[in-house]
Structure formats: C-alpha cells, structure tokens
Amino acid sequence: MSRLTFNHVFVALLFVALLSSFVILPRRDATPVPQLQMLFAPVARPTSKIASWLDARIGKAAPADPEMPDGPPRLASEVYKENEELRLQLAALTAQLQQLAEINAEREAVGDIRPLCTPFVVIGADAGTRQSLALQGTSLDGLAVDQPVLRGQELVGRILTAGMGGAIVQLVVDDHFKANGGFARFEAGSNEYIPIASKLPLVQGTGQGMLIQNLSLRDVEESGLRAGDWVVLSDRDWPIVVQGRRLGRVVSITTGAPLYARIAVQPSTDLMKIREVMVLTHRTVDATGDSKPAQKVKQMQ
Amino acid sequence: MRWIAYFILAYLFVGMHVGLRGFVGYAGAAPDIVLLAVVFIAINAPRDAALLGAFGLGLMQDLLSAQPLGLYAVGYSLTAMFVVSTQEIVYREHPLTHFSLGLIGGLFIALVMTVHGWFWPGQPSMMTETGDPIPAVRASFVTRLLSAFFTAMLAPLILFLLMRIKRLFAFEGGRKRAWGRRS
Image (cartoon, rainbow over the protein chains, first blue to last red):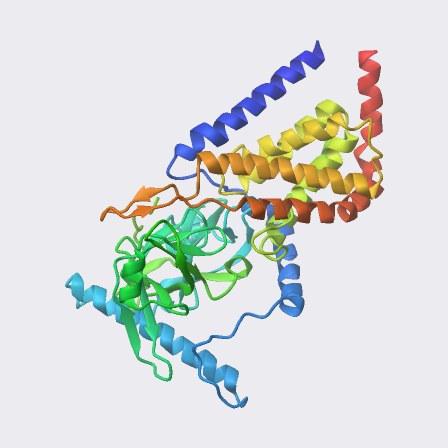
C-alpha cells in the first residue's frame, strides 16, 4: 500500500514538474528565476575563484585585437590597452551623440559612465544551460530588473531578476537575449570611428555567441560589412548612456535563410568567465554630483 | 538513506556546479556535476529514496537556473528511474558502470532539453517590422551530446570518490529496513 502511495506521489510530482516546465512557465514573459544564489555562495564563490585562478594559468589566453597596429614589444600591452579603451569610448560617444541629436536632447550630459555604475562580484553561473551569471547583490543594493550590465566599456547583459536573495544577469550571448544594434569599424591605421550604414540589425543570443539573421545578403554587400567589424547597441529601449557600447565583433558572414545573411558575432571575451561586472544602477548625475536611480528599460522579451 | 548526508551532498554539488560553470567545458558544452550526484544516489539508495532524492536535486538546480522550474527535476527523475532499474544487474563499483551511467544520464538530460527546445526555442522564428523573416534559434543538440560525454568522462573519478564515503549515507541500512517492511 505504501509503495502504491509513493508511486502516486512521485508520478504527481513528475506531472507537476512537466506541466511547470513545458506548459505554464515557458509562456510567462519573466521567468521566475532564482532567488537562492546567495545560499549557495559559500560553496560557489570559492569554487569559482579556484577555477578562475586555474583558468588564468592553464587556460587559453584571449586573442589579440586584430585591428591593433604592430609595434615593438616595449610597453606594447599598455599602449594597446589604452588605444582599445579610447576606441571603445569614441565609439560609444559617437553613437550616443548621434542618438541624442535624433531625440533632440542635446542638453543631456554625456559624462563618464563610471559614477553611474556599481561594481558587483559574480558568485557563479546559471545551474542549467542558460548563459547567465549570479551576482552577489540584491535589490537592496540598488539592483533592479533590466538595468544594463557592463564590463569595461562593453555591454555584457542586463539584470534579469533582482530580489532580496540575489540577482541574475542575462548575458548578451544567452539564447533568450535580443536587442537592436548597429555596425561600425575603425579604419586600419587611424582612430576614425566609422558607423556602417545598414538596415537595423536584430542581435540575438545563441547560447554560444550572437547572431544577426534579419539582413539580406544584398544589404550586407551594399553596406560593405566584413569580419572584424563592431556590433554596437543601438536600441531605444536601453538607456542613452549605453548606446553605442560594443556587443561584439562580426566573426563570419554566411548564407542563412534563402537570400538572407547569417552574421555570427562574438564578444571579446568568454562572458561566462567574468568575475566582476559594473551595473548601471544610476541613470543620471545631477548638478551636485549625486546620481539618480536608473529607470527600468523596457523589457526585451 | 540518511537525509542529512543527502542534503550536504546536494548543497556541495549544486554549489560547485554553479561555481565551475563557464570554466570547465569546451565549445559551450560543460559537464553536469549534479547529475553525477544523482547517479550516485540512484545506484545505491533504495528505490523510493533514490527517486525522491533525484527529483530534489533537480528541483534545487532548477531554482538556480533561468530555465523553467521543473526541467531538471524531470530529467534527473528519468535518469534515476533508469539507474534504479539497473541496480541489481550492474557492478556498482566498476568505472565502466560509472562511465556508462553518466553517459546515459547525460543523454536523458540532452533529450529533455532538446524536446523542450523544440517546443520553446530561445528565440522563436518571427518577422521584423519590415517583413524580414528571422528563423528560430535553438541550442545545438551536438553541444548537449558533448556535455553528456564530458559528464561521462568525469563520472569514474567523481563516483570513485563518492563511493569511498557512501557509508555516511547509510544506503544499506535503509535498503534492509525497506525490504524488511515489505516481507
């Protein structure tokens, strides 16, 4: 009799789990995600630290930027780093200025984004197959849903959920992420930022990178897009200060659906290995230097 | 089965899985360490405790993932049902058993994830405002198979270590008591 009871209970549990995962919850716009990461932080964080340390020693080094000029070995790393930083800033500022002009908001200051951001440590990654990171921070620390998340000058994702128990960052490579973007490049040998005119590309995460599938082969040919070009954010649902932030680089252009291009995009580093991120917890800085809380950006899904 | 030992194991394995993800793996595929805990429980524990334990581990993993609640609970339960059915016919201490059960468990998870992806792709197909078609984006099945293989590769090592401490879980005591009740 007890065996029968357990079987019934177990089948009922399985049925509820099936219903939850295949019928009820996937329909919801906002997945009721995890608020329990902090509970597992005492194990997850040291494990992650050790793994990160090992990875830094035995892992593959990040590829060098192909656009950077060749030079003598003297202080090359510092020069490259500074140059890269300047290019990223120039790209961001150019795109922001462009958008500011479009929305007739010239008065809005385009200052350094750092005072608007708060650094948060990454506890660990998603326990399933999604591309997301758990942060050691809560809504009490100013985290809120849809706040942009950056690493350096690059946009790496947005806050998917934030509560009293923790917060989750949905990375730009997550297979549920999508945003409108734009293309740009720096001409070889110069620091001239050149936006590439094209139809508005929709950047979709794939789980391992990003993909643009809504441009025809003809559009791509006409725009002169090529591997190595930048893909930057250009989406009015996101705050102005993150417009023009780099999402990644075009790595290949192939044929997708008939007559349409399949443009593969990769971020500069493996985003799942990031140990700290900057979250845009404040949107503006007033005259006194105090920052104001960020408003939620419209949810993309 | 001693449930306090189970909860400590679950806490450690789920925590380690969260901490290691992103660092261990290749081309987007990563081993599922929690699945190895499921195999360990299912290969040793009495049937009812094994099934409930696997379901619980899946639920814990679901709570730490952005995926819909219940997905891993289903996958791990199916794995446990299979492993429990083989308890009497496999040599529990043999590395080949661990490898094959790890691989089969990984395939169960891959199957559940893939079927879920068919119904609910990360990026469903759509049309842009200008009428451009955008095909659906689905996670690669090959990546999932690779994950299953990585899990199987780790299984002999992890299960070898777990087998050394299985006395802490009092599996045999629970099994004897359970059989005694039925007879």
